[in-house]
Image (cartoon, rainbow, N blue to C red):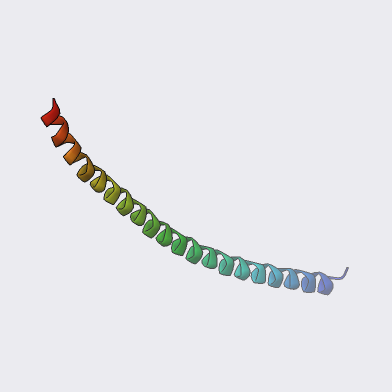
Length: 75
């Protein structure tokens, strides 16, 4: 291999690595956006589940109050 051939090989290699580096950056940025969007969706889902659990707990408490009052009368 001549010096000129080696330099051409080195230039192409550098160019290939630069292209790969750019592609990796794009993939990384896409992944960051997807992860951020997924986290926001999960936060909303978790809030929704928490709200549903709180509503269930409130209904359960409300349903037991009459039972508690009647039990107090019986005992």
